[in-house]
Image (cartoon, chains in turn cyan, brown):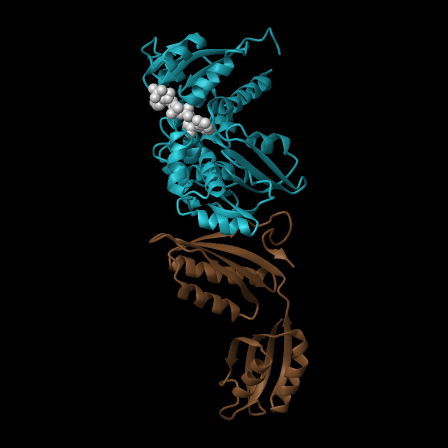
Length: 324
Length: 177
Ligand SMILES: NC(=O)c1ccc[n+]([C@@H]2O[C@H](COP(=O)([O-])OP(=O)(O)OC[C@H]3O[C@@H](n4cnc5c(N)ncnc54)[C@H](OP(=O)(O)O)[C@@H]3O)[C@@H](O)[C@H]2O)c1
């Protein structure tokens, strides 16, 4: 890497699981400088990442300034805003304001936050184009599993005919356990909550909302569509029974929550047991149907602090490469 | 084997028994009969369309028996069920609702419910069923599936279908036989 080029200056907006993962990985990257980190309570300027991570893990405040996250985005000179605040698919906030302001101030964006992209995809893409900055969001779909950049870059010579996938690790874990242990939905859900795989309020995952958000992002990215959450027909996994899983298995099928991008649907579907989308546990998988390369299936960890952060760091490094 | 037949009967009462009796004598199983009273032919006969299952080697004997009884066989179709799928249903499945749909699918002449298994529900719990459908082709199979989908919607059942194969025409799960 060009040692004589100035370091890439980055802010991390949101310091939860993903933000901390990003900070951990950026500690080892010499040519990236973190100028500020924000959580919901305040902002740390020019932080020492090691110290900041220990403070946060100890439950202590990280702020060392009276700036807000938005003021950091507007006034602190830097190149990339890593937007990793919580997802809100109704109004996209606070991420949407963060992103609009970042782009207007000519900073690139790397994000794992689906909300702003579900609510205002084309507005943000257009704004980024007008301001000549990058908007990269590999981590929003499938966490560490490569899909956005895979389709956009590696499969560039192909027309993408369809994408379908297992895009929510929580649902996949629940269905996998129900099938393996012949347990009821409610039992496995509370087990998943105990293990931290499902949220205390699991609605967003189990009702298919998270999967639908990813379908929206993929549809807008690759299928020339202009859709939002309301355009997706969504059915969750909460009515699935161990009996249904057993009956399916006897006939050679697994049941998975499948997002279908061309169709704009999310619903439980039967897939043949030998099908490459039949991944277990919390894994995600997506199969991409192309005109020349045929069908390509990828699988990987759909969530997790460091896993998701790795996708963010890879987007940061791509931006760095582009500007060299 | 499933057979469809276009027949012509004389327009006098009691003729239908001449169709039904030989089929059941040869252990055939009638799926559907459509009697077109309103479409009398110029020969003053009434067209009848019947679908039934029968062992293939008994078909010749059946033809003879029908002709002996003065029935005109206009056309015989042998259905080959080449496409197959399984559909899961979950909810408060009432057997009679499902039975009606199964009969409806069996009566189409292009699709057949091969198997229907219903799990025993826990008390007050939802039951789960799997329905195996075969049809003469992918398009016909999809029509049969949509009949099932109508029932699922009306009765608030969760219906789980196999994913569609995209790399070839048709479906992975819609195995062609
Ligand atoms: N976790 C995963 O594996 C994963 C995978 C893929 C995508 N994502 C997405 O990535 C994003 C981050 O996820 P996460 O798991 O890291 O969430 P999280 O643990 O809930 O962290 C969210 C962080 O955002 C901060 N925050 C909230 N409002 C803010 C505001 N107005 N200004 C600045 N910071 C604010 C929170 O502050 P406090 O610390 O003060 O509460 C917290 O540090 C979400 O959009 C999520 O959907 C997560």
